[in-house]
Length: 129
Image (cartoon, rainbow, N blue to C red):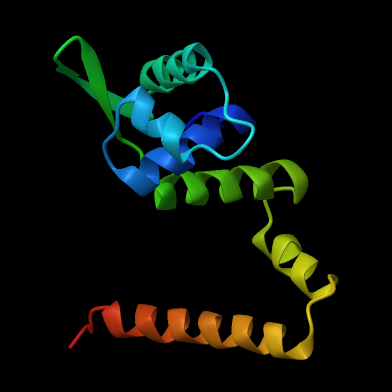
């Protein structure tokens, strides 16, 4: 999956929020400074070519909808960061969090979430007998 430019990601954030929208509706949700109609229209067409959005003809225009979910994009983006900046080693990536300014409470919350994920995975694994 390709990574998005900052402008493309900004439009995708709106698309994920709205689910379906035309260019005018996207513009209404864009933060200030709002780009030109032609700029958003071009970005949406690029996102369509990249496979991030699909479209349906509606009257003289198009209605666009996300094809890639926010979760799938986020997952692939994080995997890409781990590969590029942490030698494709999840342990190095995880260590990054302990070296940041996270307080003990935030680290404990992360640990709790990891423990919950581990329990969930154990419960999903089929038993052999």
